Length: 248
Figure 1 (tube, rainbow, N blue to C red):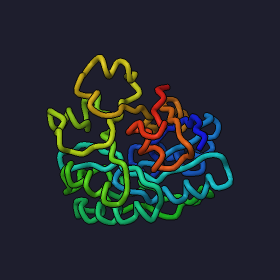
Figure 2 (tube, helix red, strand yellow):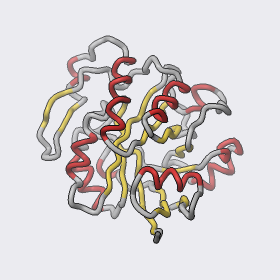
Figure 3 (cartoon, rainbow, N blue to C red):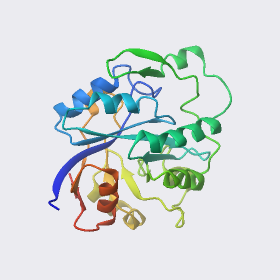
């Protein structure tokens, strides 16, 4: 099977994330990703996937592949990306995460910053959950939950001083079973390797962590794949069957 290069940005927040701009509707995200020439994106809102299906529908009929994802927050306040093949895979994860979020209602203003939008930019509602809160799941439980439902678990922005695996735990648990480390846009992968030898234990990737439309696609990774499927990305992270990461 012929392989080709896919340019990917697999860490994008929508207007459902309280920290994301309200202009980050699924439709706007897809339009900007196409403008930037991306092949694959993943919508990864904090502790929810309620806008992911709208992004998938917004991209229907285009060349852009959209993977549903979440940026989950462990009880240690570590951010971990969960990437999935389909909504059928991610929805049970979302249900479990909602059960493990604090049982307190967000302030009204905060809820209004957690906007559920359809593929036509119509507001469908607001999430009542405290999406920026830490769940009652530790890092091991989050990785196990993601893997149980067929997902990839990637430690978010491992080089950052907040919400990163090392900044929160002080070390990288050798038995965590994480699939890759994400480097933030502030550092290249080459710089990351030179900074910390421990980061070379696993594949390194870079995504935008976009919260505004203009950030989408500004930090990407290349994958050599047969098709834009999660299973192909899994092979690329392992360097199997010719699949590979091509650093941007």
